[in-house]
Image (cartoon, rainbow over all chains, first blue to last red; front, top):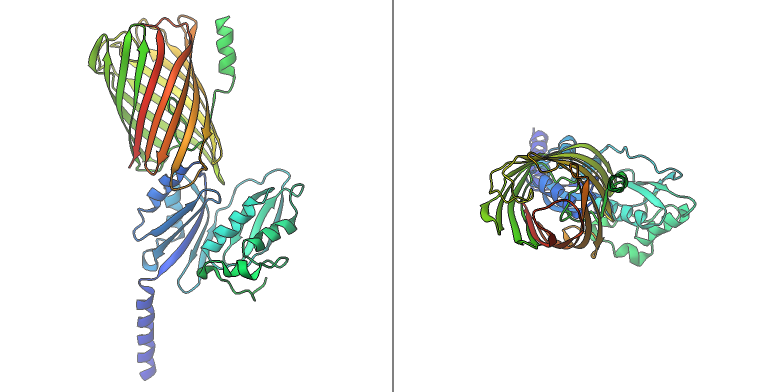
Length: 205
Length: 251
């Protein structure tokens, strides 16, 4: 009886603790051809109650925001909201306060002719890492597409092998502070990452 | 000879190459903002002619009931040597029938229709009022990226009464002076060309406009000067130049 009561108490405490905690949402959006496009997207997304800290990165197409867990409308509703704004969500990742990840991938953009595909492990932790990793990859001349899976810690890229070598892309990751199996970030660079992005350096693919 | 020149010009893809950082000033692009957006704007034209100054000050309200449709009403005030007061009210509808989104870029196509009602004074110039119904139908195609944009508009302007119908086409170039970022903070230069061919007269006009645009958050401010490079269509007065002054606020 005592154990049952204790279990119920802990369950209630856990539930109360979850209220007031936020889900971190990262959405990769296609179609953002101008800053006013981003304005239209933000305006539409802000209509979801409870949303805060919206940021939109024009170069990576990443939109990040936070929303209380109990108010999160879910993957489908977020996708529909982006569509109602006039754009296309190709990846949605929701990181819960307890670390669990929900994601949906609607990726259907066409490969660039002559570009190769590759997938490799890049260490990171969150939606901010995703934005940083993808931005760093896209900055490398010859890379046409970059998408990092938060849960699996895998970076998917399309690149022109005639312009860039895969090792250079690995190096770009470590220069941004994210370890790969082939390239390790300098300690100072790693430590300069925001606190929430300090991933476990011991974990590998 | 003019027909061939016009045909050649029309056969060139009438591209308005812009930075895609803001809406063009004297022409149009197929980018639509999100469902439920309301835009209030104005673009005053002061047209200096050999018969005096003709001013058109429209208040324009645009609304997007869905992310791919737009309806608008334009209510102008005109001030001319032939009279001043309410001008011809216009109703605009746009429908985006094609959208292909990619990372940092998009391709879109829009159908556009503008109906001009004879609500204003008779001025004698179709841009300022002829007491006749007018209609404009066009197709706009655009490819926009965060570094540059291209859009093409080809249109037909129906003018009831004795004044000739027109074929309209535009070519423009945009130059961003700042890196495209969000939140919006943009400074752009525009170089826009307008071709107009009067079907009944087989004559054409060509005007060139240079403009500067500043956009910050929800506000956009435009200033442009337009000069007629070729003026062969029979007009009320010879057009010397026009000054455009505009502002836009997005709700």
